[in-house]
Length: 542
Image 1: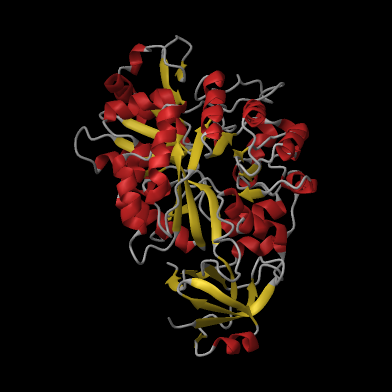
Image 2: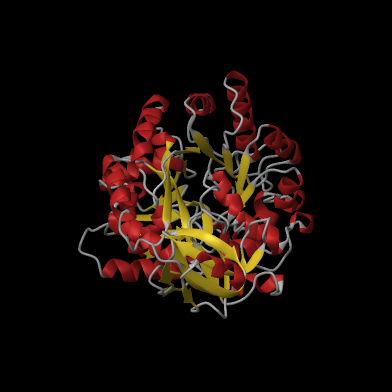
């Protein structure tokens, strides 16, 4: 096969034995050589590709925690506070007031067929002072059809009276997560999976199963490519028969621009069924599709007040959050999947959830020791220092939601966490000091995909208002770049294939218009992604 040599002003390899170079040779989709031009001349005949001669090349970014829902949510009305750009490059303005949100609902409803449900997403009540969104506020906007508004966290939704009646939840059957008003009646806010599932049943659709659509996956790949991601994780996939077929179909397409790692949602199966299901999937992968991860959901989100917090709980006195399954059942899941030799990625937002999972992993390791399990705690936003030391001792990895610092830092400082705990929100520097392999992520569509923005959050730790939250937990630019490449790859057990540019690995690269190591760190998020390269094939960004 022919050899192609790409040249750049600087290639940042993330390989500690050779941190930078000027040329990289690719053959059969893999890295053949990295080094100076003279090293390329030892390879024999090659084609020199100078398209990126004036740019910077890095390993393609690895997103270790997002959701393929990013490819589906844009089918519905966006109601987020911050402006967003969809995979096709269309700009959606933010809705910065309840009145603006209600007006968008009215306008969208007018374009729908009579009685057709209106589904919206991205709303976050913590940005609005005063009354929390309820069915009455939605009824005032649209009352002639069911309305469902998914909150930004995806852990809460609010529905109008028509939707409550259609689902029979207006009768309040006692499902945990149904929020009640002063009269003891459902107010339209539904927290966590059990309560939200009743709405999906009534609609005869489950938004979380939209990931089974090939169109959703293609759009997800497009969104990833636009921000320089070449390996992306869908960290909550039901792995239905249709879903598996869609994953195999899309990743077999020659021009699909990313490698995809779906994690099976543990709550969709009994532990024993889940083990069997995932073991059946293991041989079905390909170079762009890797099975093997299990996603566990313990608690909810801090900003949604559904995360499980240790004493003194929420700073503003709000009641503690909700478990997505009884704690004993969650601990049993850890035991079963660990014993089966599978890798767990565990959602733990609050520090009480972290504590529960540390206990569960420690117990599982006592019973069935595994030297390289790479179980990973996801989010773990307020993990404390004693818990960090236990994490290191147990050989766990961390993948922290660094974007939280910007999008919800101000809310956490004033309402949910207070001063001291907001200093250790996403304690990245402490994790690195303890030698814990750590990645950072966007949790898209909760926040936008964008590894360079995520790296900027880790480096600057600035909230949307510009307040620095915990300067001592800042990391350096090289450390942040490692977290969005090799660190994330390690948590996926893919560091032997992606995450750095060295011989034998997939030739997955991102092309940048500026050098992240020489630019002012405060400008890290302004670097533009010009293209990605997957297995040697160039993909221009939108």
